[in-house]
Image 1 (cartoon, one colour):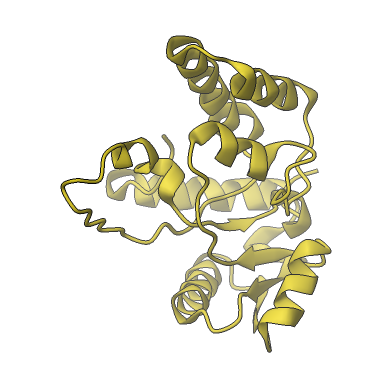
Image 2 (spheres, rainbow, N blue to C red; image 1 turned 60 degrees about the vertical axis):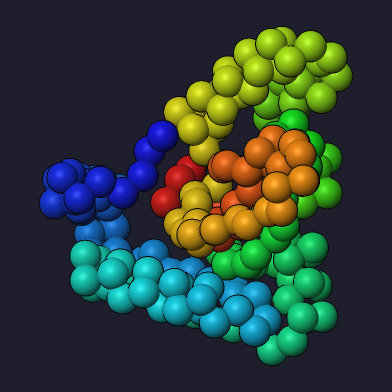
Length: 197
């Protein structure tokens, strides 16, 4: 799975500078966006500020504004109305990977705030939810996950908080919801940042 790698950090930054320059936006020129931060979310605001500082080191002309929501009602209105360029927020997970994926990434998903729409994605998610056999479901979601990360990448996960789960020994089945699907999201729509067509 892609992510931060200290061994390739310098090369990754150099590649990013080359790509930004090739796009005609040397130093981040003409790239400007606002990060809407959920109400009362200090860790997400701090992460947005860190990202802003790190991006300015590499792209000194980039304009990133961090905008904490004034209250939960206004944040919800911006979020559900898809009235944002970038967003940092927390959401609890669904009880299964199939439900979580459908909720966030199906064209009609109730939490598809980035408005991702892809017919192949939708078909795979619908087939995955309908699959009754574990092995069939597993194969569908292995393929879906690979396409999600390698081809579609509709959102960028920039932060996943560390989670330590403590469960009483008599509770069974908890391991079915622990892992990448138990995370919270902080994402950015690449197209809205002016970085993708």
